[in-house]
Image 1: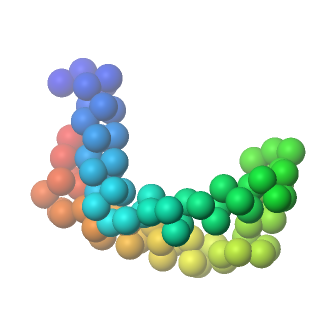
Image 2: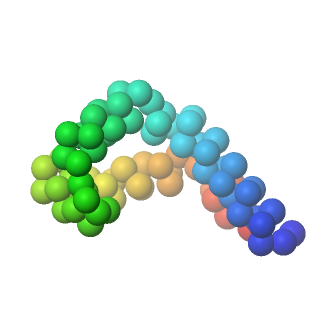
Length: 80
């Protein structure tokens, strides 16, 4: 399997479990988009600094990442 096919396959797996776990539901994405429009960050760093100071701590983001990772079955997450 070449690198392009591997990346497409991995992206498809991530998308499947991102959708299945509800990580892209409107109640999660909508507020985020409103915040970005209100804050109007000039750079990604500005957004990250504001977000970490006002919304979620690094620990909370790590927990969200862990929840997402754990939503993917082991047999899939070991796919290469």
